[in-house]
Image 1 (spheres, rainbow, N blue to C red):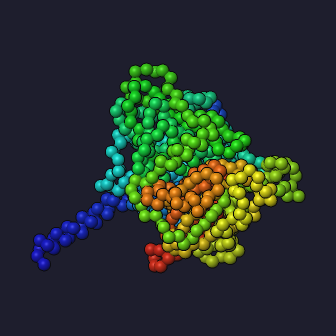
Image 2 (tube, one colour):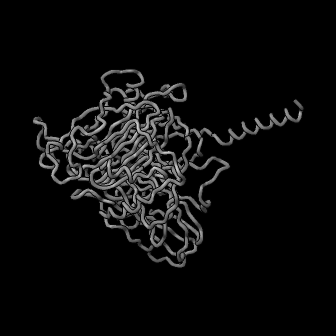
Image 3 (cartoon, rainbow, N blue to C red):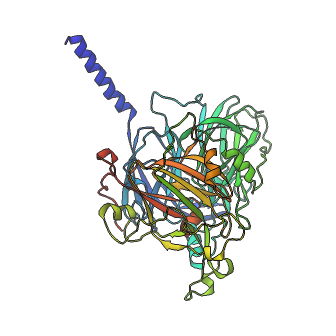
Amino acid sequence: MTTVHTFSILLFFCSLFSASLIIAKVQHHDFVIQETPVKRLCKTRNAITVNGMFPGPTLEVNNGDTLEVKVHNRARYNITIHWHGVRQIRTGWADGPEFVTQCPIRPGKSYTYRFTIQGQEGTLWWHAHSSWLRATVYGALIIHPTPGSSFPFPKPDRQTALMLGEWWNANPVDVINQATRTGAAPNISDAYTINGQPGDLYNCSTKETVVVPINSGETSLLRVINAALNQPLFFTVANHNLTVVGADASYLKPFTTKVLMLGPGQTTDVLLTADQPPKRYYIAARAYQSAQNAPFDNTTTTAILQYKKKTTTSKPIMPALPAFNDTNSVTSFSRKFKSLRNVVVPKTIDDNLFFTIGLGLDNCPKKFPKSRCQGLNGTRFTASMNNVSFVLPSNFSLLQAHSNGIPGVFTTEFPSKPPVKFDYTGNNISRALFQPVKGTKLYKLKYGSRVQVVLQDTNIVTSENHPIHLHGYDFYIVGEGFGNFNPKKDTSKFNLVDPPLRNTVAVPVNGWAVIRFVADNPGVWLMHCHLDVHIKWGLAMAFLVDNGVGELETLEAPPHDLPIC
């Protein structure tokens, strides 16, 4: 071999090595969970925060980077952090849901989350996954393309993350604890927020209203995240079109809209071009409320899109927002979602599952006083999937019990279909179906299994648009519709060419959605409604995915600092 050839080969391998050093970084962060005085709506209260910030810090990474986040719990509550939408390939110990993949981080203790971003680009987020702490413990997780690659759309001039949230004047943990005691629905929020601020339309909020600057002619990438606890939200910007280009860290075929709808947990990336007269324009969000006769926060949060060379200090222009119950707008919006390119969707199905999702009512236990049964007609509110109201363990996490073969913590008897077939969306559902069975039941999947799940809303108590989130996976939404899912009629309408890839699906009110995925990530993975009141009531289940063959198809060993119960 000549010296020139040897040198060329060495140079080639050195360039590969240096490229890998440039491309894949390890980021280290410290999250200190602490109480911080926060003033909103004229009142100050101590809120649980990360590093004294509300919302918490934005993490920016590249596709391929590894994150190591050490969480120090200096607050009075147990806590965990969930990295919403991160695939967590073989790193289920870092996923975060309390008593599912880990025991909570106790006050005074710490835990380091270690995971790598693999094949994901766009907008995700992180949040607490204990009690209602995510009301204030949350932040954006921005995943940029690998260095040397680019967006599949023209590079924007600016990028801004806009996190939609909910604010309670009371301590949110007290709010849900009170509801748990009484069996009633929890008190509604006092405000919605954009990046932690309610905006001009609320008392004592004008000075801190978030301002988003832009120059005439510029295009800005707005990364919109619904971090609200319990409310799907409409979002719009006065007089401006929004071009949707991504959702849940997956690219989409671009389409233009005036209004977005995001269920809690969902993210949407949009391009906005500053093509209007240089004035100030409200960015606004308010509730999409699909449950009939249920109380909700009907206020509107605002930020301001401000042209830098504005010629007036007049009041910002207010946009029109859909009616609170405008399901037609939601349907029209969701049906425009298609993956950027044709995708490989599982067509042969190994596990064909049918899950009912919805509310229920527990009869008042004989030993309870009336004060503890303040749900409808002297009952206690509950919720379930396939008539099983999910109960979290308290002595071990599910993943720990599975990994260590600890008996008695869970069963793998979650039903593949509802125990009783009925008119799921009808108006005359038997009262005998209102009370689910409590249990810690998982559904077992073989590694590599091709899975279809029909998610069927029910009209028990009331029907509602449910944002269903699956941990550890993205999935294709191949179909959705209203009424009862009919496999004979509805299967032929599936989009098996370019369906959107999501981690949270907004199941239509009084309707259904169908998702497909391949079970290629071993571990225990929670699937639940991202309305936090519903997960507290039991609207959840978990998949147990077996290891495959070899190291690359096997769950990693638990880290040395994994919290103990």
